[in-house]
Image (tube, rainbow, N blue to C red):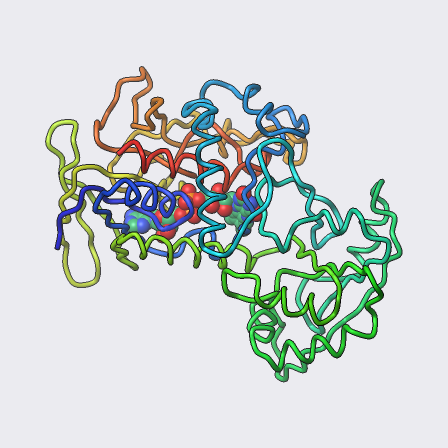
Length: 414
Ligand SMILES: Cc1cc2nc3c(=O)[nH]c(=O)nc-3n(C[C@H](O)[C@H](O)[C@H](O)COP(=O)(O)OP(=O)(O)OC[C@H]3O[C@@H](n4cnc5c(N)ncnc54)[C@H](O)[C@@H]3O)c2cc1C
Protein backbone atom coordinates (compact mmCIF):
# COMPACT_ATOMS: atom_id res chain seq x y z
CA UNK A 1 0.00 0.00 0.00
CA UNK A 2 1.71 3.21 -1.15
CA UNK A 3 -0.89 5.76 -0.01
CA UNK A 4 -0.99 7.42 3.41
CA UNK A 5 -2.71 10.31 5.10
CA UNK A 6 0.63 11.38 6.56
CA UNK A 7 4.23 10.54 5.70
CA UNK A 8 6.72 11.29 8.46
CA UNK A 9 10.33 11.46 7.26
CA UNK A 10 12.79 10.74 10.09
CA UNK A 11 12.81 8.19 12.91
CA UNK A 12 14.33 10.32 15.69
CA UNK A 13 12.34 11.64 18.64
CA UNK A 14 10.63 14.35 16.54
CA UNK A 15 9.55 11.90 13.84
CA UNK A 16 8.37 9.25 16.28
CA UNK A 17 6.33 11.79 18.25
CA UNK A 18 4.80 13.17 15.04
CA UNK A 19 3.86 9.68 13.84
CA UNK A 20 2.32 8.78 17.22
CA UNK A 21 0.36 12.04 17.46
CA UNK A 22 -1.00 11.75 13.89
CA UNK A 23 -1.87 8.05 14.25
CA UNK A 24 -3.62 8.86 17.55
CA UNK A 25 -5.92 11.17 15.54
CA UNK A 26 -6.91 8.23 13.34
CA UNK A 27 -4.58 9.06 10.44
CA UNK A 28 -2.94 6.37 8.36
CA UNK A 29 0.75 7.11 8.93
CA UNK A 30 3.92 5.93 7.21
CA UNK A 31 7.22 6.67 8.92
CA UNK A 32 10.28 6.56 6.64
CA UNK A 33 13.65 6.51 8.30
CA UNK A 34 17.11 6.18 6.86
CA UNK A 35 18.73 5.47 10.25
CA UNK A 36 17.99 5.25 13.95
CA UNK A 37 18.32 8.95 14.85
CA UNK A 38 20.11 10.61 17.74
CA UNK A 39 18.25 8.65 20.42
CA UNK A 40 20.30 5.61 19.47
CA UNK A 41 23.44 7.29 20.80
CA UNK A 42 22.24 10.30 22.81
CA UNK A 43 20.42 10.59 26.09
CA UNK A 44 16.76 9.75 26.71
CA UNK A 45 16.25 12.56 29.18
CA UNK A 46 13.96 15.32 27.92
CA UNK A 47 15.76 18.63 28.40
CA UNK A 48 13.13 21.34 27.91
CA UNK A 49 15.08 24.49 28.78
CA UNK A 50 18.11 24.66 31.09
CA UNK A 51 19.66 28.01 30.11
CA UNK A 52 18.65 31.13 28.21
CA UNK A 53 20.79 32.42 25.36
CA UNK A 54 22.69 34.79 27.66
CA UNK A 55 23.55 31.75 29.78
CA UNK A 56 21.05 32.59 32.56
CA UNK A 57 20.13 29.45 34.43
CA UNK A 58 16.46 28.42 34.13
CA UNK A 59 15.02 27.01 37.37
CA UNK A 60 11.45 26.87 36.08
CA UNK A 61 11.14 25.92 32.39
CA UNK A 62 7.54 27.18 32.20
CA UNK A 63 8.68 30.66 33.26
CA UNK A 64 11.75 30.41 30.99
CA UNK A 65 9.56 29.93 27.89
CA UNK A 66 8.29 33.50 28.27
CA UNK A 67 11.88 34.83 27.96
CA UNK A 68 12.64 33.21 24.59
CA UNK A 69 12.92 35.20 21.34
CA UNK A 70 10.02 35.14 18.86
CA UNK A 71 11.89 32.93 16.37
CA UNK A 72 12.54 30.15 18.91
CA UNK A 73 10.60 26.93 18.08
CA UNK A 74 8.83 27.03 21.47
CA UNK A 75 7.72 30.62 20.81
CA UNK A 76 6.48 29.63 17.36
CA UNK A 77 4.15 26.90 18.64
CA UNK A 78 3.23 28.69 21.89
CA UNK A 79 3.44 27.69 25.53
CA UNK A 80 0.15 25.74 25.49
CA UNK A 81 1.62 23.40 22.87
CA UNK A 82 4.62 22.81 25.17
CA UNK A 83 2.28 22.00 28.09
CA UNK A 84 0.19 19.65 25.94
CA UNK A 85 3.20 17.81 24.53
CA UNK A 86 4.74 17.30 27.98
CA UNK A 87 1.47 15.98 29.39
CA UNK A 88 0.95 13.71 26.39
CA UNK A 89 4.48 12.32 26.77
CA UNK A 90 4.18 11.67 30.51
CA UNK A 91 0.85 9.86 29.98
CA UNK A 92 2.27 7.80 27.12
CA UNK A 93 5.26 6.68 29.22
CA UNK A 94 2.99 5.70 32.13
CA UNK A 95 0.71 3.79 29.78
CA UNK A 96 3.70 1.89 28.36
CA UNK A 97 4.97 0.91 31.83
CA UNK A 98 8.07 3.12 31.60
CA UNK A 99 7.06 6.19 33.62
CA UNK A 100 9.06 9.42 33.51
CA UNK A 101 9.13 11.96 36.33
CA UNK A 102 9.30 15.78 36.22
CA UNK A 103 7.22 18.77 35.22
CA UNK A 104 7.56 22.21 33.66
CA UNK A 105 7.57 23.71 37.19
CA UNK A 106 11.24 22.95 37.86
CA UNK A 107 14.36 21.49 36.34
CA UNK A 108 16.01 18.46 37.87
CA UNK A 109 19.77 18.33 38.41
CA UNK A 110 21.23 15.05 37.22
CA UNK A 111 24.65 13.72 38.30
CA UNK A 112 27.01 13.25 35.36
CA UNK A 113 29.93 10.92 34.74
CA UNK A 114 32.33 13.81 35.41
CA UNK A 115 30.87 14.64 38.81
CA UNK A 116 28.86 17.70 37.80
CA UNK A 117 25.10 18.32 37.77
CA UNK A 118 23.20 18.85 34.50
CA UNK A 119 19.69 20.35 34.20
CA UNK A 120 16.93 18.33 32.60
CA UNK A 121 13.16 18.35 32.88
CA UNK A 122 11.56 14.94 32.25
CA UNK A 123 13.65 11.94 33.25
CA UNK A 124 13.15 8.19 33.66
CA UNK A 125 12.33 7.09 37.22
CA UNK A 126 15.76 5.46 37.39
CA UNK A 127 17.30 8.96 37.15
CA UNK A 128 15.09 10.57 39.79
CA UNK A 129 17.51 12.49 42.03
CA UNK A 130 15.28 12.81 45.10
CA UNK A 131 16.89 9.77 46.82
CA UNK A 132 20.40 11.17 46.19
CA UNK A 133 19.53 14.53 47.70
CA UNK A 134 18.15 12.86 50.82
CA UNK A 135 20.96 10.27 51.19
CA UNK A 136 23.69 10.24 53.84
CA UNK A 137 25.72 7.30 52.50
CA UNK A 138 26.28 7.15 48.73
CA UNK A 139 27.92 4.23 46.93
CA UNK A 140 29.33 5.30 43.56
CA UNK A 141 29.60 2.27 41.33
CA UNK A 142 31.92 1.74 38.37
CA UNK A 143 32.62 -1.36 36.31
CA UNK A 144 35.98 -2.92 35.54
CA UNK A 145 37.32 -1.67 32.16
CA UNK A 146 34.28 0.54 31.51
CA UNK A 147 35.51 3.31 29.22
CA UNK A 148 35.42 6.94 30.44
CA UNK A 149 33.74 6.23 33.75
CA UNK A 150 35.58 6.87 37.03
CA UNK A 151 33.74 6.63 40.39
CA UNK A 152 36.47 8.70 42.13
CA UNK A 153 35.89 11.59 39.70
CA UNK A 154 32.16 11.49 40.35
CA UNK A 155 32.54 11.42 44.15
CA UNK A 156 35.15 14.18 44.11
CA UNK A 157 33.02 16.41 41.89
CA UNK A 158 29.72 15.89 43.67
CA UNK A 159 31.18 16.33 47.13
CA UNK A 160 32.21 19.91 46.20
CA UNK A 161 28.63 20.88 45.32
CA UNK A 162 26.58 22.50 48.13
CA UNK A 163 23.94 20.04 49.33
CA UNK A 164 25.90 17.04 48.02
CA UNK A 165 28.51 16.71 50.78
CA UNK A 166 27.82 13.08 51.70
CA UNK A 167 29.64 10.02 52.85
CA UNK A 168 30.82 8.73 49.43
CA UNK A 169 32.25 5.27 48.87
CA UNK A 170 33.52 3.92 45.54
CA UNK A 171 32.96 0.36 44.37
CA UNK A 172 34.10 -1.30 41.15
CA UNK A 173 32.11 -4.30 39.99
CA UNK A 174 33.83 -6.82 37.74
CA UNK A 175 31.53 -8.45 35.19
CA UNK A 176 34.41 -10.81 34.34
CA UNK A 177 34.42 -10.04 30.62
CA UNK A 178 37.34 -11.60 28.77
CA UNK A 179 39.02 -10.22 25.66
CA UNK A 180 40.96 -7.08 24.89
CA UNK A 181 38.54 -4.37 23.92
CA UNK A 182 37.10 -1.58 26.07
CA UNK A 183 33.86 -2.37 27.83
CA UNK A 184 30.87 -0.16 27.00
CA UNK A 185 27.70 0.55 28.96
CA UNK A 186 25.83 -1.53 26.38
CA UNK A 187 27.95 -4.59 27.28
CA UNK A 188 27.19 -4.11 30.97
CA UNK A 189 23.50 -3.46 30.33
CA UNK A 190 23.20 -6.70 28.39
CA UNK A 191 25.05 -8.52 31.18
CA UNK A 192 22.61 -7.10 33.74
CA UNK A 193 19.67 -8.17 31.56
CA UNK A 194 20.63 -11.75 32.47
CA UNK A 195 19.82 -13.43 35.82
CA UNK A 196 23.53 -14.41 36.14
CA UNK A 197 24.63 -10.77 35.76
CA UNK A 198 22.05 -9.59 38.28
CA UNK A 199 23.18 -12.25 40.78
CA UNK A 200 26.88 -11.31 40.36
CA UNK A 201 26.07 -7.61 40.76
CA UNK A 202 24.01 -8.36 43.86
CA UNK A 203 26.87 -10.37 45.41
CA UNK A 204 29.61 -7.82 44.66
CA UNK A 205 27.58 -4.76 45.66
CA UNK A 206 25.77 -6.24 48.67
CA UNK A 207 28.79 -5.93 50.99
CA UNK A 208 28.82 -2.15 50.66
CA UNK A 209 25.15 -1.40 51.14
CA UNK A 210 23.93 -0.03 54.47
CA UNK A 211 20.28 0.63 55.35
CA UNK A 212 19.18 3.66 53.32
CA UNK A 213 22.22 3.66 50.99
CA UNK A 214 21.84 5.29 47.60
CA UNK A 215 23.79 3.81 44.69
CA UNK A 216 24.94 6.10 41.87
CA UNK A 217 25.46 3.94 38.79
CA UNK A 218 25.86 4.45 35.02
CA UNK A 219 22.67 3.81 33.02
CA UNK A 220 23.05 0.04 32.81
CA UNK A 221 19.98 -1.23 34.67
CA UNK A 222 18.42 -3.09 31.75
CA UNK A 223 18.15 -2.46 28.04
CA UNK A 224 14.36 -2.67 27.84
CA UNK A 225 11.97 0.26 28.42
CA UNK A 226 10.87 -0.92 31.86
CA UNK A 227 12.22 -0.90 35.41
CA UNK A 228 12.44 -4.66 35.98
CA UNK A 229 16.22 -4.90 36.53
CA UNK A 230 16.29 -1.80 38.74
CA UNK A 231 13.30 -3.00 40.79
CA UNK A 232 14.76 -6.49 41.29
CA UNK A 233 18.15 -5.20 42.46
CA UNK A 234 16.67 -2.45 44.65
CA UNK A 235 14.43 -5.00 46.30
CA UNK A 236 17.23 -7.54 46.84
CA UNK A 237 19.77 -4.97 48.12
CA UNK A 238 17.31 -2.70 50.00
CA UNK A 239 18.79 0.43 48.40
CA UNK A 240 17.88 3.07 45.82
CA UNK A 241 19.65 3.48 42.47
CA UNK A 242 20.25 6.74 40.63
CA UNK A 243 21.52 6.40 37.06
CA UNK A 244 23.96 9.07 35.82
CA UNK A 245 24.25 11.06 32.59
CA UNK A 246 27.12 9.62 30.53
CA UNK A 247 28.96 10.04 27.25
CA UNK A 248 27.38 8.25 24.24
CA UNK A 249 26.22 5.50 23.93
CA UNK A 250 23.54 6.32 26.49
CA UNK A 251 21.20 3.39 27.03
CA UNK A 252 18.55 5.86 28.20
CA UNK A 253 18.01 6.96 24.58
CA UNK A 254 17.79 3.38 23.32
CA UNK A 255 15.16 2.54 25.94
CA UNK A 256 13.06 5.58 25.02
CA UNK A 257 13.36 4.78 21.32
CA UNK A 258 12.25 1.17 21.89
CA UNK A 259 9.23 2.35 23.89
CA UNK A 260 8.16 4.86 21.22
CA UNK A 261 8.61 2.35 18.39
CA UNK A 262 6.45 -0.18 20.30
CA UNK A 263 3.79 2.45 20.85
CA UNK A 264 3.82 3.61 17.22
CA UNK A 265 3.43 0.02 16.00
CA UNK A 266 0.47 -0.52 18.34
CA UNK A 267 -1.20 2.52 16.76
CA UNK A 268 -0.71 1.00 13.31
CA UNK A 269 2.10 3.27 12.10
CA UNK A 270 3.78 1.66 9.10
CA UNK A 271 7.51 1.88 9.77
CA UNK A 272 9.88 1.74 6.79
CA UNK A 273 13.42 1.34 8.10
CA UNK A 274 16.44 2.12 5.92
CA UNK A 275 14.15 4.08 3.60
CA UNK A 276 15.90 7.10 2.17
CA UNK A 277 13.48 9.85 1.13
CA UNK A 278 15.15 11.44 -1.88
CA UNK A 279 12.75 13.97 -3.37
CA UNK A 280 9.09 14.98 -3.53
CA UNK A 281 6.40 15.25 -6.18
CA UNK A 282 4.66 18.61 -5.90
CA UNK A 283 1.40 20.04 -7.19
CA UNK A 284 1.75 23.79 -6.71
CA UNK A 285 2.33 24.39 -3.01
CA UNK A 286 1.33 20.85 -2.01
CA UNK A 287 3.52 17.75 -1.80
CA UNK A 288 1.60 14.80 -3.24
CA UNK A 289 4.23 12.04 -2.99
CA UNK A 290 7.60 11.26 -1.44
CA UNK A 291 10.04 9.32 -3.58
CA UNK A 292 12.51 6.98 -1.91
CA UNK A 293 15.73 5.87 -3.52
CA UNK A 294 17.53 2.75 -2.47
CA UNK A 295 20.05 0.45 -4.10
CA UNK A 296 17.60 -0.91 -6.65
CA UNK A 297 15.21 1.85 -7.79
CA UNK A 298 13.01 4.78 -6.85
CA UNK A 299 9.49 4.33 -5.43
CA UNK A 300 6.78 6.96 -4.97
CA UNK A 301 4.57 7.01 -1.85
CA UNK A 302 1.47 9.18 -2.10
CA UNK A 303 0.30 11.29 0.81
CA UNK A 304 -1.97 14.08 1.97
CA UNK A 305 0.60 15.64 4.33
CA UNK A 306 4.29 15.37 5.26
CA UNK A 307 6.22 15.88 8.50
CA UNK A 308 9.88 16.59 7.79
CA UNK A 309 11.89 15.50 10.86
CA UNK A 310 15.23 14.71 9.26
CA UNK A 311 17.43 16.00 12.08
CA UNK A 312 19.28 19.05 10.67
CA UNK A 313 23.02 18.72 10.00
CA UNK A 314 23.50 15.85 12.44
CA UNK A 315 20.61 13.74 11.09
CA UNK A 316 21.42 14.47 7.43
CA UNK A 317 18.35 16.63 6.80
CA UNK A 318 20.45 19.74 6.10
CA UNK A 319 23.72 19.64 4.23
CA UNK A 320 26.40 22.26 3.65
CA UNK A 321 29.04 22.46 0.96
CA UNK A 322 31.38 25.39 0.31
CA UNK A 323 28.81 27.22 -1.87
CA UNK A 324 25.47 26.24 -0.48
CA UNK A 325 23.49 25.15 2.57
CA UNK A 326 20.43 23.13 1.67
CA UNK A 327 17.59 21.06 2.97
CA UNK A 328 18.06 17.64 1.44
CA UNK A 329 14.59 16.27 0.52
CA UNK A 330 12.23 19.15 -0.34
CA UNK A 331 14.95 21.66 -1.28
CA UNK A 332 13.58 24.21 1.20
CA UNK A 333 15.61 27.38 1.87
CA UNK A 334 17.79 27.26 4.98
CA UNK A 335 18.21 30.31 7.23
CA UNK A 336 21.99 30.68 7.71
CA UNK A 337 24.41 33.61 8.07
CA UNK A 338 25.54 34.38 4.47
CA UNK A 339 29.18 34.71 5.45
CA UNK A 340 30.84 31.52 6.75
CA UNK A 341 32.99 33.62 9.07
CA UNK A 342 29.77 34.47 10.89
CA UNK A 343 28.81 30.84 11.58
CA UNK A 344 30.78 30.58 14.79
CA UNK A 345 31.97 32.82 17.57
CA UNK A 346 35.59 32.37 18.57
CA UNK A 347 34.61 32.19 22.23
CA UNK A 348 33.68 28.54 22.07
CA UNK A 349 33.17 28.09 25.80
CA UNK A 350 31.89 31.58 26.59
CA UNK A 351 28.33 30.42 27.11
CA UNK A 352 27.06 32.39 24.09
CA UNK A 353 24.82 30.79 21.45
CA UNK A 354 26.69 29.68 18.32
CA UNK A 355 25.20 31.01 15.05
CA UNK A 356 25.82 27.67 13.27
CA UNK A 357 23.74 25.90 15.90
CA UNK A 358 20.75 28.12 15.07
CA UNK A 359 20.85 27.35 11.35
CA UNK A 360 17.68 25.65 10.14
CA UNK A 361 14.31 26.03 8.46
CA UNK A 362 12.04 28.99 9.17
CA UNK A 363 8.43 28.12 9.95
CA UNK A 364 5.08 29.75 10.75
CA UNK A 365 3.06 29.07 13.91
CA UNK A 366 1.73 25.84 12.35
CA UNK A 367 5.31 24.68 11.66
CA UNK A 368 4.88 25.04 7.87
CA UNK A 369 8.03 26.18 6.02
CA UNK A 370 8.20 29.88 5.14
CA UNK A 371 10.59 32.08 3.18
CA UNK A 372 12.53 35.07 4.59
CA UNK A 373 9.39 37.23 4.13
CA UNK A 374 7.22 34.78 6.10
CA UNK A 375 5.30 33.41 3.07
CA UNK A 376 4.25 29.75 3.38
CA UNK A 377 6.17 27.67 0.84
CA UNK A 378 4.38 24.32 1.15
CA UNK A 379 0.87 24.12 2.58
CA UNK A 380 0.82 20.48 3.66
CA UNK A 381 4.37 20.13 5.01
CA UNK A 382 5.30 20.53 8.70
CA UNK A 383 8.85 20.82 10.05
CA UNK A 384 9.92 19.33 13.38
CA UNK A 385 12.91 18.81 15.64
CA UNK A 386 16.53 19.62 14.88
CA UNK A 387 15.62 20.89 11.37
CA UNK A 388 14.17 24.05 12.89
CA UNK A 389 15.99 27.37 12.94
CA UNK A 390 16.41 29.62 15.95
CA UNK A 391 17.78 27.59 18.87
CA UNK A 392 21.12 26.30 20.14
CA UNK A 393 20.15 23.10 21.93
CA UNK A 394 23.63 22.47 23.34
CA UNK A 395 23.72 25.81 25.11
CA UNK A 396 20.07 25.84 26.15
CA UNK A 397 19.73 22.16 27.02
CA UNK A 398 16.59 21.92 24.91
CA UNK A 399 17.38 19.20 22.32
CA UNK A 400 14.87 16.46 23.08
CA UNK A 401 12.42 19.05 24.39
CA UNK A 402 12.15 20.85 21.03
CA UNK A 403 11.99 17.47 19.24
CA UNK A 404 9.19 16.26 21.52
CA UNK A 405 7.12 19.45 21.41
CA UNK A 406 7.44 20.22 17.70
CA UNK A 407 7.11 16.56 16.67
CA UNK A 408 3.92 16.19 18.68
CA UNK A 409 2.55 19.53 17.42
CA UNK A 410 3.41 18.76 13.78
CA UNK A 411 1.67 15.36 14.09
CA UNK A 412 -1.51 17.02 15.37
CA UNK A 413 -1.48 19.84 12.82
CA UNK A 414 -1.35 17.51 9.83
C1 LIG B 1 25.44 12.72 21.56
C2 LIG B 1 24.18 13.50 21.81
C3 LIG B 1 23.59 13.42 23.07
C4 LIG B 1 22.42 14.14 23.34
N1 LIG B 1 21.85 14.05 24.57
C5 LIG B 1 20.70 14.73 24.82
C6 LIG B 1 20.07 14.63 26.11
O1 LIG B 1 20.54 13.95 27.01
N2 LIG B 1 18.92 15.32 26.30
C7 LIG B 1 18.37 16.10 25.31
O2 LIG B 1 17.31 16.71 25.56
N3 LIG B 1 18.94 16.21 24.10
C8 LIG B 1 20.08 15.54 23.84
N4 LIG B 1 20.68 15.67 22.60
C9 LIG B 1 20.00 16.45 21.55
C10 LIG B 1 18.82 15.63 20.98
O3 LIG B 1 19.17 14.27 20.96
C11 LIG B 1 18.43 16.07 19.58
O4 LIG B 1 18.34 17.48 19.50
C12 LIG B 1 17.07 15.50 19.18
O5 LIG B 1 16.97 14.15 19.56
C13 LIG B 1 16.91 15.62 17.68
O6 LIG B 1 15.82 14.82 17.28
P1 LIG B 1 15.34 14.82 15.77
O7 LIG B 1 14.25 13.79 15.69
O8 LIG B 1 15.03 16.20 15.33
O9 LIG B 1 16.61 14.38 14.90
P2 LIG B 1 17.41 12.99 14.81
O10 LIG B 1 17.34 12.23 16.07
O11 LIG B 1 18.74 13.32 14.25
O12 LIG B 1 16.59 12.14 13.73
C14 LIG B 1 16.66 12.43 12.36
C15 LIG B 1 16.11 11.23 11.62
O13 LIG B 1 15.92 11.55 10.25
C16 LIG B 1 16.43 10.47 9.46
N5 LIG B 1 16.69 11.00 8.11
C17 LIG B 1 17.52 12.02 7.76
N6 LIG B 1 17.45 12.20 6.41
C18 LIG B 1 16.55 11.28 5.94
C19 LIG B 1 16.05 10.96 4.65
N7 LIG B 1 16.43 11.64 3.54
N8 LIG B 1 15.15 9.94 4.52
C20 LIG B 1 14.73 9.24 5.62
N9 LIG B 1 15.18 9.51 6.87
C21 LIG B 1 16.08 10.51 7.01
C22 LIG B 1 17.62 10.00 10.23
O14 LIG B 1 18.02 8.70 9.80
C23 LIG B 1 17.03 10.00 11.64
O15 LIG B 1 16.24 8.85 11.86
C24 LIG B 1 21.85 14.97 22.32
C25 LIG B 1 22.45 15.03 21.05
C26 LIG B 1 23.60 14.32 20.79
C27 LIG B 1 24.23 14.43 19.43
